[in-house]
Amino acid sequence: MIQLLKNKSMAGIYHHTPFCLSKCHYCDFYSLAWKEKTIPQQELTHALSKEIHFWQSILLEKLKADTLFFGGGTPSLLDPEYVEKILEQVHKLTEESFQESTLEVNPKTADLDKLKSYRSLGVNRISMGVQSLDNGLLDRLGRAHDAQEALQSLEFIFAAGFSKVNVDVMYGLPGQTLRQLQTTLEKLQKFSLKHLSAYQLIIEEQTPFYQWHQQGRLDLPKDDIVEDMEKAITNFASSKDMKKYEVSNYACDGHDSKHNQHYWNYDSFIGLGPGAVSFLKLEELKKDALPMSLQEKWDQVQSSKVYGLRLTNKRDLKAYHKYAGSWEALTTEFISEDMAESEFMMMGLRKKTGILLSDFEKKFSKPFPEHLRQNVEKEVRRGYMILHESGFALTPKGQQFANEVIAGFLV
Image 1 (cartoon, rainbow, N blue to C red):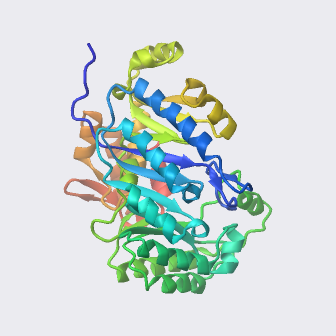
Image 2 (image 1 turned 60 degrees about the vertical axis):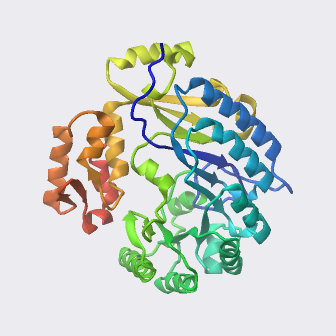
Image 3 (image 1 turned 90 degrees about the horizontal axis):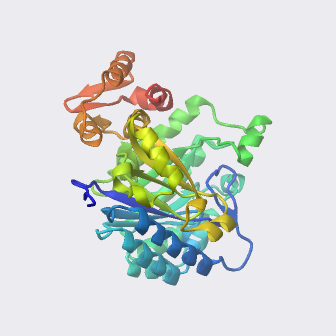
């Protein structure tokens, strides 16, 4: 008899659209600059249907997924009728209604009628990649839109009736000045924004920026200028009553990203589409639905205390269309308890509230380990962490060196 799960935690579902109008110079996500007039939406939804059936066959029970995130790529390239088909499919995986359904928008692809249609289908949150309102910087980033299109798209988003709207901005960009960032923020002041994601440029391998950086061709701002940019962003957020609740995110009360909280809380999630990643606890899967090689590995690793399984779709559109709904489409990785604890720390420390000891104990069914406690005490002595009544969090100084601090908790 199948043992049903007890006290299931909430989860999220992510859908990846792998098409863009152009490939940004800093982006290492799986996406394709699509030159055709239309994207192959029918093929995508057919492959998705097979993928949904696959998940239905290996999940022990439906997820308690309360968030859906359309990411990419550029999901706003999708026609509303295909968004409707995707919604019909993903609802088969969850016993919950989505409290939050977010769709990422590129300003070049956002018109009022399309946005109204998305909203009528149940999309209730929009995240738009503005990045900058300086046309020179946008061109340098490889963005498809210009500043005027971004401002017009924001007008359309609010006119379509969306009250939950996120804007992405970037700083620390090649050749970017403090004044350019301040001008972008000033132009955003007139909008009733309640969420802001502010990302410092990270130079990822396999991107044009990485190649140019290796060649000494990227004129990056000095550290003191980047610090001034961070202050300007914090001041802008404060002027909108937004508080920093994660390393790169600010929100008014009730407007934080519920979907991203699933990642930061180390919850389960399913990723759909080429290149998408899924993460599930072993107890959420049917062992006998896995291929024999994984079942044997499951037996081998159980003795070493395995927490979960990470599954990654191939970063290849043709392979996804061909193999969607089968194990051939996936690479798999068993996640040990030690690795899971490290990843829990890595994600949780991004939050302003940091780590609650009760959350750790609930997630792993054991007290907070001594070796992690010693690491925390070391960072407290360095001034990078602060203890609070229920756990610990990064100090403002620790947030500046977050990557270094978090690295100390990785196995």
